[in-house]
Length: 253
Image (cartoon, rainbow, N blue to C red):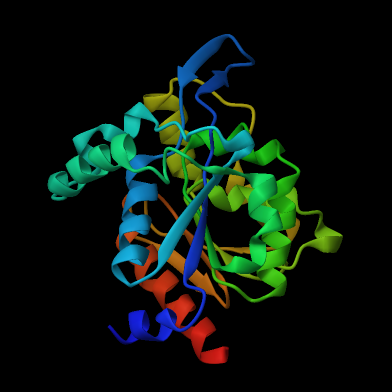
C-alpha cells in the first residue's frame, strides 16, 4: 500500500513494449511456426505492477495488437496458476488497452510519461523488436534516466541492438534464457533453428556479465535499474526485483 500511495503523487505509468510478430521462420525458412509473446511472461508482470498501484500502457510495432504464442497457453507453464491463466486469456480478449496499443514512435514521443519499461519474452520479439530502430532509442532513454527496465526471457537479447560504444549496460549483470534452455526449445519444442539465437553468448561478447540459474529455475537478476529473467517459470523472482527497482527509483526521486 505504501508503494501505491507514493506512486499516486507522481506519474505511475509503466510502458509494456510487446512484439506483434506472429510467424517464426526456422531452418532458413524451410519451416514456419506460429509465435508471439509468451502469455505468462507478459501477464504475471502486468498483474504484479497493476496490483502494486501502477498503470500500464502498451506499445507495439505499428500499433498492431500483440500476438500470443499458442505454446504459452499450455498448462505446464502455469503450474498451480490455472486460475490466473484463465484470467489472462480473458484479459487479452477484452482489455481495451491491450487491444489498442500505441506505436513505438508514439511511445518515444511520450517516453517521459513513464517511470518504467517492461518487455515480455517470447520468440516473436526476435523477429520484429530485434530489427526495430525504436528499441535502442527506448533502451538508452530509460537507462539514461535510471528508470527501471525489465527484460524477460528472450527480451534481454534486445540489449544487443544498442552498439557497444553507445550501450549503457556494458558491465551490468544480466540474465536471459539459458543456452541449454535454447537448445531444448529448438530441439524438442520448435523442432527447428531460428535466425536469431545464442543470446547468452551475444550478451557476453558485448561485454555484459551473464548469469543463469538451472533449467526451468525461478531465476532473475537485478543490477541497478536493469532487471532480467530467464524463462516462463521466473515470474515471481522477476516481479519481486522489478518492484524493488521501482521503489528505489521513487526513493531517489
